Length: 438
RNA sequence: GCGCCUAUCGUCUAUCGGUUAGGACACAAGGUUUUCAUCCUUGGAAGCGGGGUUCGACUCCCCGUAGGCGCGCCA
Image: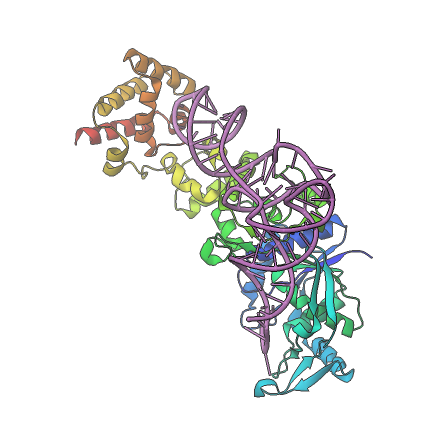
């Protein structure tokens, strides 16, 4: 029998990382077994399941390349079928009508009253519960709407799902679901429950703990493969020491018995590290294209920058980028005079004594340079420093701050070369003047 | 309250009865470098507690403890 799994989210407008991780595990499992990965949209809550919410879900799936193998199933279209099954259960005496709580008549499914219920979870192992600790439960509300448990199980039957891989929070529901499968005369699928993703306090990771939705990570500039790889490693390990894995590697290595059953904390620092690793592997063009988008979004005009020059800048930035959102703030000085080189910055980052003279000397040197390439600049400034009995380092810092406003970034001379003579000298003069005015 | 589940460095994890308990992130120190990042070297850092079982337990069992989940006419 070939594997058929499904990801069955209810569209709420946001896709939580815990949720998408379940999708990733399902996808990995399906691909590993050459099975089918299906999407079922549980859109029975008409209030929240707007077309925008559904589109957001689809976009997230596409962004992470969680490609599914059949047309998505929309649960709301099968209400009649769910109700028909409820009637069938009623006819068989496996369910009954009741006016529970006086809210009107609903349909309730009978759970066993004695014995022990148990199943083997592919992640958690054997799980058992006494029948007396379970209760009958509503499958059709008094307003006629099928309840989650019914719809979920009936759809899984109809979609011929073989393995249900979902969040830990469904462990208890599984007893209900298995009984429902049996009542329908269908052998229950295999179950695997994934541990939750939690915050520093051990509580379920939520919006309040930081970025919690796929869209937010995309926004911040994490690559889809980073999120995929990182989430796959939360609760699963390949068994060797590898952590940076391709999809094919993960697919080949993925098995449910290598999944952990305890909750995992979300570590943003490690995610950032991983993203840096993957950003460095990107072709320059890809990085440059995304950089353009980010700068545009930040209203930094780059229309005056020639493509070749832009690529040089991108090449300087790429090796030191962890995620895209941090980039615009780190490279303004390449594109505009509106970078943080004001009185406050000067005061904070430059020593008043001697710096103005130093910058003047450098400026005078650079104006007269025969060419403006970084090797030549390096040699010339170094010589100037030595001739004054100083180290190159003593010159580099003030120059860097004067032309960029910040204390970190690409190699200084590569930076000056890209900036060009006019801009460099103009900025040196300007800052020297500011220092003297104090 | 009742039920179910879980428990290895700060974090993610390896270990499936015998290891100096390994790796990664983070952190610290050093090296390379003009800063940052990268890179290299080094370091600190873990089996929740108590009982068993066993020649031998992180590993198996029990009891605690702590945490999570569930106990809706939500999904």
